[in-house]
Image (cartoon, rainbow, N blue to C red; front, top):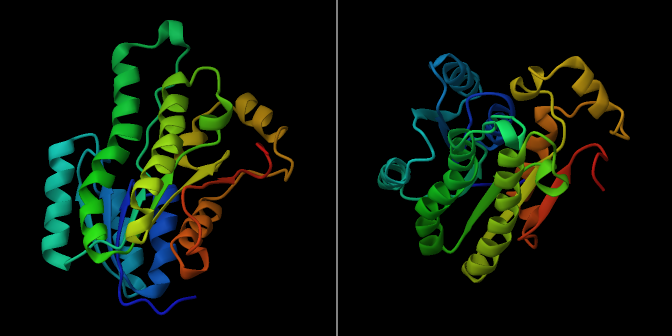
Length: 249
């Protein structure tokens, strides 16, 4: 698609599912890829690194909690010191702690907001300094269709994903004049580990609402993310791209 000079790409939540698919999609241009994850062990991240290595990609993994401002500031400082720049940031890290509001604890609320929304702030603030200096960069934030629609039992998750949409539009306005494009992708019902734990009756209910009649694949999201970071999308910023099979129109 493009002839890139070995971009430096950071993918949070990059060890598996959508994050892994995004990293693998970028592998075709042979970038330097930094995976950020917070899995209990390194098995998933090692699998992703091995797949990238087989494709000839120089890749690294860091197990860090994105909700920690200081930790992310240090990490991005180290990345910039080693590679000189950050060209692409994909804010994909996210968790769920689903409960009806009456049963939701403050800790359930804080943890989801901390990872899903505070994490986006932390990583974007840390990465954007490099992009401003180089007058070029791409940021793609992974939101969700429920940030637009709402969903019972997910007030914390929906709030975090709606927040990402507003954050994306605001930052896009702030840095457009510096040659930085900031967009979001809002997946629908995607076949991942996060959705695999849902009861079958819940999955069936979702399926009945999807006009295309199938679950999304992580690769569907990766295609949209990669396109937004390509020259083909150079005139697109501040947008929420819905990839949901028609679940929300």
